[in-house]
Image (cartoon, rainbow, N blue to C red; front, side, top):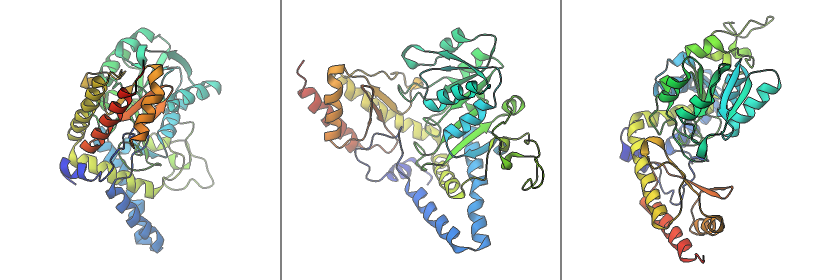
Length: 373
């Protein structure tokens, strides 16, 4: 896969699917890789097993390439939450984050503080946008790290990592990148820890998490959740308990699922071959189409209109009297979206088809025609 048209074609007949921020249906290349790897693992031949195990290193290298990071600083994780817990439980001092973040961040922070880890300083940004100004105003001298989502799961707001770095100075910056990695260009070099998962926008399925721990993070974080794969031992640490190694693999617990690694490697390679910029540009076009439809039918949107501050998530905020009828209209027209707390989250991808957008327009038109107030 080397061009955008081929990549878009790989989405096939996914008409009506607008829920990429929740789950990404598997890419055909990922399905093919999984089937091939399963056959190899079923063979019982050492050479075949080794081919699949090699995917762990291959997937880490592929993720590192998109991050612009050294391969030995990237490790695979079962999920975004696993990677974030590794970083947050390893932190000392005070962690600053928004109380409106996804629970992978907020729960890990609260649990860590409860067992004597880093203390938590909460901020509640206006509209949920963690801007550099909001971070600057919330900083105190005891804050040692800041955590933020690259793309906010509720509003679709795209954080400016470089500007946040300028504000926080030498403090650690921990980033949950699951809603943007691979589909939006970002200055990941501004971060110290980046965690994500391939089961949404990458179309790799669950279990395909990853973490990058930059050198500053390795120097300052104490890997308290480190398992036997993260020790200084060359192989299994039998009859001894060596200390954690001063490498990213210190933030692992056990050997990674090589089948999941094969899926992640394949999905990330697809994105790399096409180019994040090309994929992101197509997503921006589809998002603009959704904005136009929302405006046409007078449906408020909380997602920033500036393309520099959004990715593939468009959050509709209908009047309370409109929320249920709009959700029903979308469902009746065969559209998959997320409905939560009176809001409706639409998530487009590069492969979102004109037919899907027409369905969305028809659903909004039917809703608007039924308005009685």
